[in-house]
Image 1 (cartoon, one colour):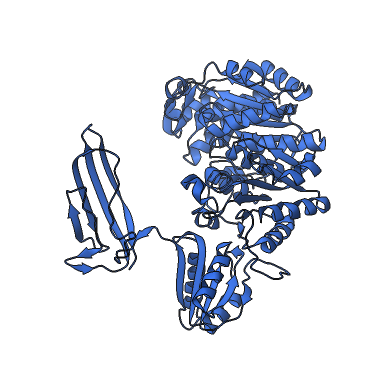
Image 2 (cartoon, rainbow over the protein chains, first blue to last red):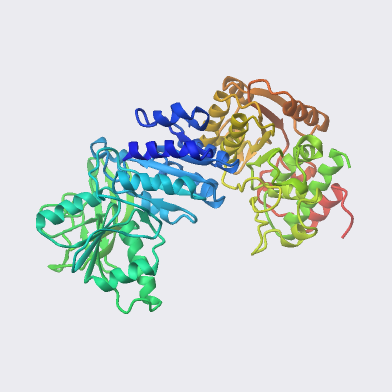
Length: 360
Length: 271
């Protein structure tokens, strides 16, 4: 889909002489169609994403519609403040393009896992976010962003994604695109993981309705109200942390609609995303919560509290973790607060606290 | 009004604003006041009636915390509605924030987070190069903000792209937020660093109006293939003897006898 996006952008650049592409020294064998055809509107800013974004903001204020391009966290989290301040506060015509959304570059390690971008970017005022599910949506994203005034974010996967849509006419923010009809449950996905989810549904023989949500955020009641009323359950799926992502954005709007009386009942909503959590259900995966410390431990103290401030777990033994129970009973799903202090034999002292999510 | 008298008026207004609305950063406003006065005394091609004119020069004021110097200059030059700044500085519901705001006429970019404006200025200068536009781009940076890595990304970039329509002015007052520049993160030899980065470097006394005027006019007039760095050696708190070279005046609002004494020194009339 990244090639389709750049091909489309290159075609559009012939018609729209304000389109400018700036890369952060990435895009080999992808960006050449653009850079060769429009050398005066192409720039390699080097491995310097803060400056890439600043320069883009400077070009934008002089009238260009600037697309910055790099991998995952580099054009986003690395230069978050430039996006917030130079781009969004000034309502600059800058579109951030990240390739390798979610785990598209999985084997390359955590540096390349783009799993917090939606949460961080969707809170920025004026930001319009697009996460194509396939090449057709990538083309739609390029067409939309080529004329969109203001900041934008396009999160691409990489190459060779199977098509979700047989045909796609238009795409607009706030809209869900129906992929297939169904009953009972509606699956709404954003990004390339949608195709994998459809494959799973087929394998399980489930006749759920399926929708694609290429634009994250700004859903209207005209989209969500029929969805909530027509289906018994809604399932969202995304390649992103559970906290603050696409599913969370849907839940927020449902809650606002219920509060405003637009919805008579809160819909059942299941969010499928990457858990920042442990799941003490005995399946051998994430059953015990305990830290991993790369020091030889001399003294150790791990204590954990529930939301009422009760101390429900304590140990001085580094080898022991919390199994999710208190007085023999599995605790309810939710946030728990921990404090972990230790001293290593070399005298290194550490005092950490934070919260962990328990999912049953 | 010559630039020396203008600079004094800027200082007096900045002092009054910091006093009346109990704000900080008078020291950094005073150190750059002379450079700002010279820029708005015929160096920059700007005017209140052409703030959106594409041919105007662009000034990117990166040390947004020293807002009172720029606000005062723009106010005196008629960019703001008469009396608006004096009444509304830092007031809720207005854009006279104590870090400069681009929603005010004559201000190109909101700043306040350090290390942003030089890169944006590079984008603006590059656009002029690509389109063969004649406007010039100026950026005023503090010395402390040269600690920001983003500035050094921009410094590499400007030299690589030969942005000779870009003039970076460093207000080198030698004091940053929590100590002297030499103590916190030493910049010296700054001129050598900038030369090594392939910039055309001019070192001047940032309070000598003749030197500032000739250097900035020359920098504006003659593009020679390299971006220009003007290192303005300045004194934090310049103009009021008891504020000079004192870290405290990065923070303190001038009140009571301090305010009265400073006003007298700057030639203000009695209250």
